[in-house]
Image (cartoon, rainbow, N blue to C red; front, side, top):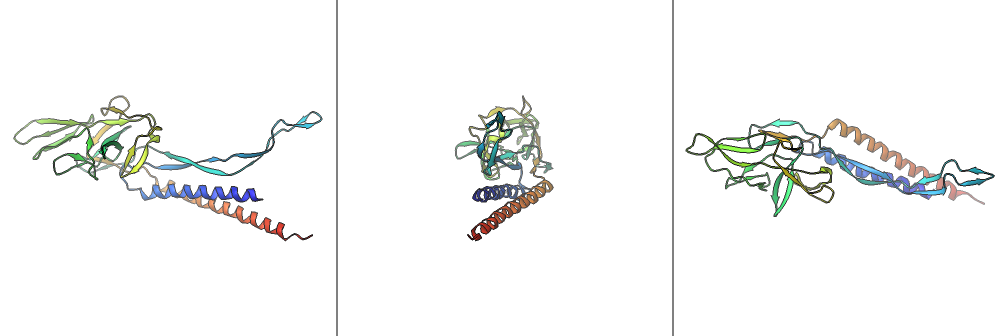
Amino acid sequence: MIRSLSTAGSGMIAQQFNLDVIANNLANVNTTGFKQQRAEFEDLMYQGFKAAGASLGNGVSQPEAQQIGLGVKYAGNATSFGPGPAQQTGNPLNMVINGEGFFQVTKGGDTVYTRDGSFRTDSTGLVVTTDGYPLVPQITLPQGYQQLAISSSGVVTAVLPGGNDAQELGNVQLAVFGNPAGLSRIGNNLYAASGGSGQAQVLAPGTDHAGEIQSGFLEGSNVQIVEEMVRMILAQRAYEINSKAIQTADDMLGVLNSLKR
């Protein structure tokens, strides 16, 4: 009976993790470039009493194993890198990646990655993120520029003061990973490479399997509110039924303790 208490308890803990992930998705429903996560679980070890095929005597064998599961554990998060809705802004420094890839920025001397294309310029004209992290490779826009444009292949052009023709100012490059789900989220809409993601492959937009740039748009969150609500209800019901299992086991133990000789 004690086994059922710990098993159901592990189920309640797992659903707490599940609800934590769901709550984070819902909190970021309007976060630019946010990618939905889903909690994943694994069953724990099994206590075996008799193996399948064990001899029962007289030439008879055990047809199925006698095993009792010991619960569930939180295994990790699966990330959906499906595209979010494109939201038109009219600002040419706002960019959407139509396909695979991440923008590269510098934070504290390290290169980190983001799907948030809401770039702007600082006081020197350097293209930076909302938090001031410079885009990699660095692009600086001169004062007084006009008709800024970013092509689908990442070429940045503008008409400079005193000129009539557009001049190339730099190129936006994208980082592509063999396993983007292995990237570590570090906040501020940023990801860091890890052993699970592999090394970044830097490509020009639209080449190989890197996506193309769409200027003047931002990528919204790909969180589906209705889907999250359904998952939240399921998590609540699973939590309740596991708590009911604990109550039932406790009642049965109470009956056992009340037995008299």
